Image (cartoon, rainbow, N blue to C red):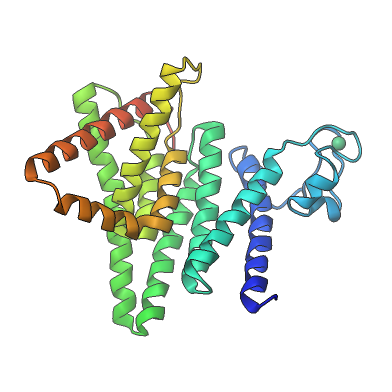
Length: 300
Ligand SMILES: [Zn+2]
């Protein structure tokens, strides 16, 4: 039986794949300063323009078996992977939030996060146009949601203030940690790309989203960098953006459950253990952020 939900889910998946295809273009062209809409996609080797069927997300690559039809140069598997990844995240959003305005807004947020994480991995920068536009979109979305849910201007204003509060906290918490880290570890603080990304997360997910995202990013980031050092990997430079983006995605899908579990855990613990745990978390955060700072060049 095919019902309405399944058709909608299929549409969301297909749309996600198309947006993933466009994100491939953004990730490649935006840092290079090339127009996002012109020229249309072509083979980088021979300039063969992609036909209609070759442009179909995921399937186009599979039909060509990963090679240009004209000159047979191989096309990176990361293109269909990004398309499938975006489509799966969009489908997960639809499954989690249903046919609501939340799903529409969060799909946009995910598109921004994917593009930012990938560009940061490629170039160690978070382009200002992307973080700034994502930040503004978050405030607009929350204000709209406030009106939708309460049908009053007061509701819209309340959500607007919540979004601005989350944004300010995101930028502020990041700066505070960075300043403390600089004082403690003597590292030079640089740039504001990560702070802006945190501000963007705050605008979309509020203050609790910022705290969760920062906490998760530093734990996962420390684990990844620690294992890279232990395994003797030659890679020593890790951008922070992908960890922040991953933290934001987890906050988006499971934030309320994690906060409930945390409160439950804290309620069953004595004050001493509580303080020690908080201290350990804070030190991990500072060490991690200062380490990232050092391996990072100036960014906008
Ligand atoms: Zn070619």
